[in-house]
Amino acid sequence: MLELLKTRRSIRKYQKREVEREKLDIILKSALLSPSSRGRKPWEFIVVSNPEVLGKLSQCREHSSRFLAGAPLGIVVVADPTECDVWIEDTSIAAIIIQLTSHSIGLGSCWIQVRERMHSEIKKAEDFIKEVLEIPEKYSVECIIGIGYIGEDKESHYMDTLPSHKIHYDKY
Image 1 (cartoon, rainbow, N blue to C red):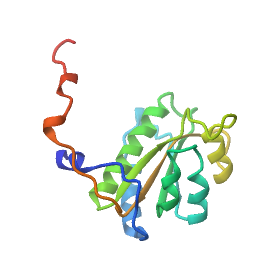
Image 2: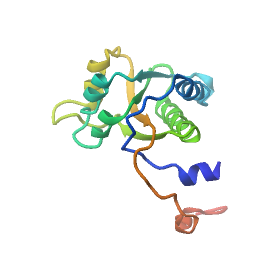
Image 3: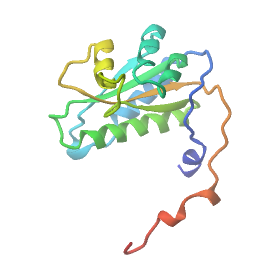
């Protein structure tokens, strides 16, 4: 697990290569196995592989989402907030499980934050995505995870550069 965490990086450039159904199934099963508060599983996942739709979704935010247009796959993580008061935490856990699973099977990924972000000065990113994907109003969108075969080189994290000063024992 430590090696997986050291080598996982946010990947924003992907090869022009489709993600195989077998790998997608592994990712989705892992997401469905994600822990959630009191086992309520308030999350749901919208898998997007249509290049036209990915192109539209890449415009959900002004800058940080553009890379999604070049990804072969996106998973939109949503939840029904009435199912659980900690849906934000539950969707975040599921999203990182998606990212770690993707990395473990040779794929890269990157998180696009949606909740509390804007599409434009007057429209929320969440509202834009709900329109594009026809998501029912009761759902909230936490994020989109772009996924694909890695198309850029990034170095691993180094153990000697970890911010160890942020660890405290027994008291602050």
